Length: 133
Image: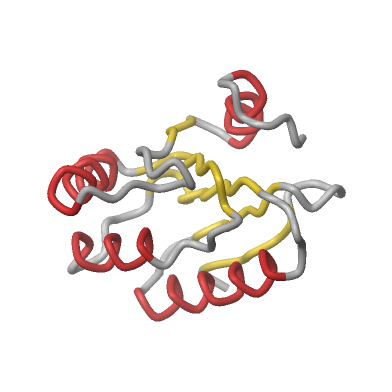
């Protein structure tokens, strides 16, 4: 399965999506629908970790699809950490923010980037975000 959505902790305060190759936009949007349903199952703010499997590749039409993903992010998701993200995807996210004035997370700021899951969890704890790990 190229996109797997799970709770990252027993408290159900961090959702995690693990992406693996090969991946296409249909699978990305299917994972977002699953993520949305899981976020609907709680009544409090949550964080999100997106793990991109050693950087992977950037899919075609990334600018428009990333904008759509960001705009359709569940309102309970406050903070997002991207793990092992391809450098081009980071640049595209920055451009989406610049062009469309949208960002990931409730504060609508750009997401954070981490080299691994452990660091992502630590970033959620240490950067003023809610401690949920």
